[in-house]
Length: 54
Image (tube, rainbow, N blue to C red; front, side, top):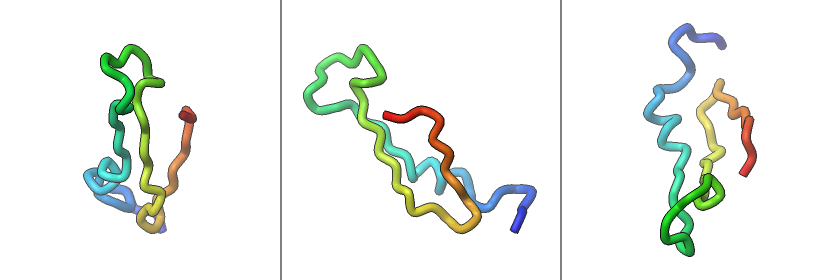
């Protein structure tokens, strides 16, 4: 079902993605110094398109 305003509130979607610095990194200098965690249990009608893989 299409909804003009989207199928889920943005704050719920942003809560599904967590980015944190890797424990062994003291000073991050690259995107590889971070760990990206994604909760893939998304609300109905929402799809995740990964453009960049980590």
